[in-house]
Length: 545
Ligand code: F6P
Image 1 (cartoon, helix red, strand yellow):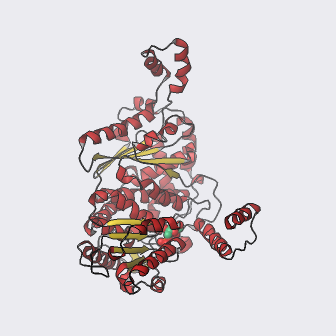
Image 2 (cartoon, helix red, strand yellow):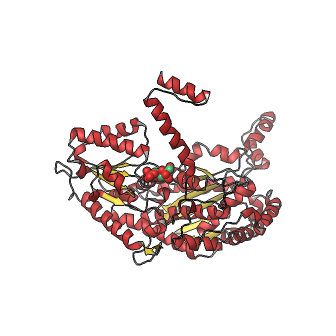
Image 3 (tube, protein in one colour):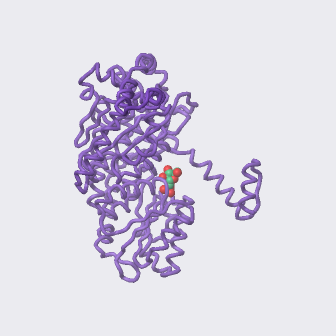
């Protein structure tokens, strides 16, 4: 069953939301709270060790009802069914989208073209486990019989961001292996990393679903040459493994077939960390923790699949995003994790969200005349407060922000944790309430300022407030809670894609630049510039001169 192809703007709910927006657009969150004292109960979801408070959003009960109506009218329920049942919902590439099967228990059945894929997934998981155990406990050794000390993940996009983000987020759970990530085709990236490595104790993990990505192949070739120069061609088989669905290309590159960890075409690059692409994660924190990550993600999948829309985290969060994008005209959203460990989460979500939903043609092949694809950005709090929060508080743009925080820190330093979380709560309250003229005046009066100075200062110190935030409060950062958190965002991407009537799982937009770069590289290699616009031509001449 294909995904429904309903233009959301033609639904009754959309029209009702547009009218409702006119009624609510000037309401202040402070007044909404005053009117409804039980607002935080009404607009919050408790799920396992997650508490998600979305009451500080510019919504009321009618908004929620109409947004849920919209989800129903575009047949989100049917879409969820097709997705989990392995239908080829990535229609432009004729593929199923089944990263959910990677984290399903081995007893589950997930059919792709009539074949249960779960046993294959389990086989690869066993291979990952055996390999990682041996590397971690030193049983598997390098060409001079020394145990490995360093792992180098070579990949880009989903073959880098996923493993890198998770490895850094789970740094607390790490073992003795040092894990490095090389992604950029910028030679300084690879050489800077190789500089301090010892070939005798370094294991390279080349990750590329297609095994045709320029950046990854260039970096892997450079790393292999560096290695052979100091070791030998024969030693490559002990130091290079690959993760890919393109076995012929990997073999051609010179990696032993025993050293290949396969994945399948129904695993999208930006959703692949749950597959063998997560090998570096498993090497870094051990297979048991990798498995907990998968369990957490699976639990969120089950919640998404079974919970009523009203109580469904990805559905509610996805709908809120639609509300701001399509009715308030918000262009971007901020994600602010109050945990330094999660500092790569916004970058990871940028690929997930923007590569998936940055589309302007609908599922019928027609150009779209409504907003899609949220621009996502962020940095960890409290650092972000001292960087861009000024604009969120007093700038001209509406930026809905999501705050992610943990009740317990990992080193259990209560003093630091209390300070961190005091900021976490203070910011959402400040963004909501702002500061009125009367409050500013009171504050300034106590400072005994001259009357004219006081009057002059007042307008600059007023905060209008009414800035929407959603708070995700989780008990503790563990592999399991992290898995659930990432899955929550993945499923939200799906929800928004279904509502916007776009295909979320292809990424044709990345192709054009790649094609042109190949052409230009050829011209650079031959010092022969062909037909380009005058700007590109001059720039190329300057580069070559
Ligand atoms: O940027 C496009 C893209 O295809 C991503 O979706 C993917 O994660 C990345 O390139 C890397 O692709 P591969 O794993 O095939 O090298």
